[in-house]
Figure 1 (cartoon, rainbow, N blue to C red):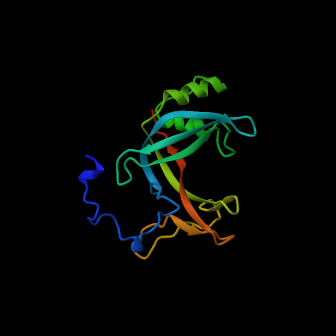
Figure 2 (figure 1 turned 90 degrees about the horizontal axis):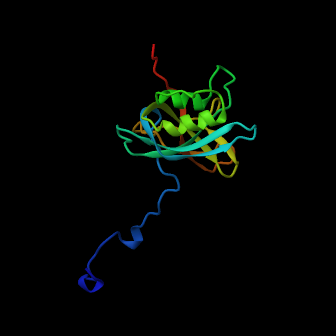
Figure 3 (figure 1 turned 60 degrees about the vertical axis):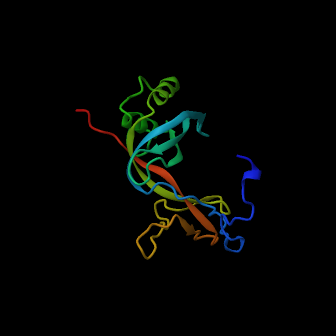
Length: 179
């Protein structure tokens, strides 16, 4: 087919006077429990404290958000509340375990286990103007539902009144008991 095969006077698309520009924020997967797989290879780096960090793209498997992706990070920084790290939780949710506590063992384990795994998501909102998370963390406002009960993925920053879009974050990896 070439341009000469088209009727250039036919109506198509939308009326230019009715055009609506795209929203600045896309809707992430809904908060709650989901099944996931990792897409592609992790991007490894280190935290300011020198711990291992892996940035990964996760894809929802099944449900109304099937196929949606989001980016999150895991770390080997130990929790202040229990003897674990988000990297340990990710690896164990995928059914594995690091062979020891060296960086190399964690890199090997993270690379070896792309999923599937289960986790619970939450939404957080980062304000670019304030350069900080202002919605969704403990003690902060939450994303609100509209009059139909649908969770809005855009909120108003409580500090500067700018628009803040929801970002999916893993709140908790679901690690099955193997006992």
